Structures are given as structure tokens and as C-alpha cells.
Image 1 (cartoon, helix red, strand yellow):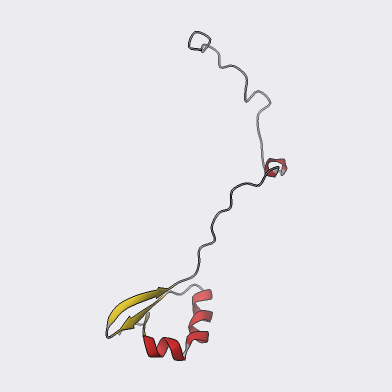
Image 2 (image 1 turned 90 degrees about the vertical axis):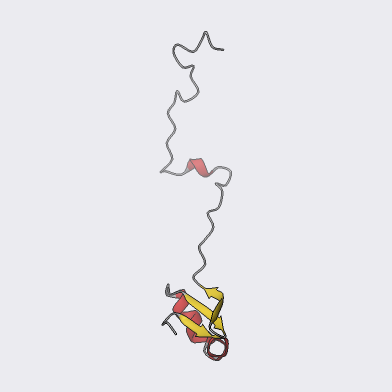
Length: 77
């Protein structure tokens, strides 16, 4: 077996140790009878939508004229 593959029994027996390694960034495949059946990998944090008022932080910039009419577009509207 490869280094990143574990049998079900081995995974069950050493779960705490495996979880610590996963938290450190490693990925493991759990096998049953030589066939991969599961993957243990670090969770990717989901990006949260901006909260109301989030644009008030110092890194956010919006031009003062962001909603001004675009020159030459008068005939389109």
C-alpha cells in the first residue's frame, strides 16, 4: 500500500494520530480490501458572504462618482 492509504482497521485503531496529521495538512485514503472507499483531508473553510456594513473597513474603497452617468450613454437610456 501507498503511504497515504490506510486500511479500515488501521484507520480505526490510530484515528487520533491520523486526525492530527490531517490537521497538519496531510491527506489519507481509507481502503477496504485494497479499494479506496473514503478520503480524509483538511476541511477548506467556506468563504462567508460580506456582512452588512462590511464595506466600512479600512481596506474597502469606492470612488465618489461610482454611480455617475457614463459619458456617451445618454442616447442608450
